[in-house]
Image 1 (cartoon, one colour):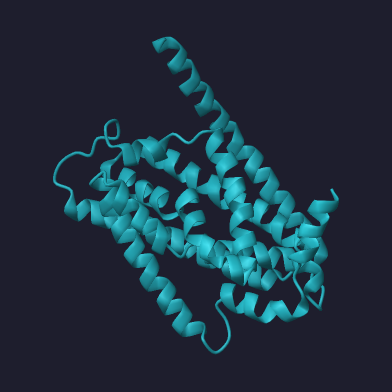
Image 2: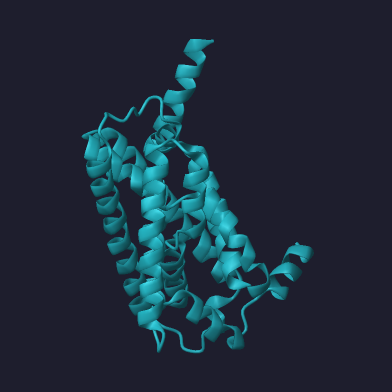
Length: 263
């Protein structure tokens, strides 16, 4: 425990760290417009690349989309806002996430509708198959990635690890699969992909927020804002994770039973 405590103390937030950290996450201040423009451009391009990569069953293309996808930023900003008890920031960041999700799904649906001339197989395309039947292991991975993402984004000297976290947790590709599923009329596949995204999203909020709190983000903030609202928000996030764990567990059992039957 002493070693763990030393590691936490060595990496704790100081008040001087906050300006750079907040500028990295929140769309505000003098550069708000240009940062939003860059975010929109990257999100648009990553959606196009991921959608076409999934349709073409190209792993390399989808990985490329994961690397440039900027969706981790507003999700982690939501977690940071909750930890700091700044509900205005948390709410604005969450709204950015909601609009982004709708935009990615809509654009993916449009691209699928105008580019695909044959029926897409959800049983042979591995990029689709891996995202329409999420399991409990996806929840465990997402929680670990939430911890890693929060740690990486909080420290300038390890921020280069973020692309690896983005590849591991994959936020945009599941949303693209939702759009593809809707365009193809396969609502079950679209629902499975959305479940995977919600699992990743809630896990980042809970695990990422927990890591930021452990590193002292809440205490580094000079003004304490709405602590009661912060507790309630994380309770709702935890409940959300428990709810998504139910269908994930059912899917895991189904896969296990199928593997036992084949033996």
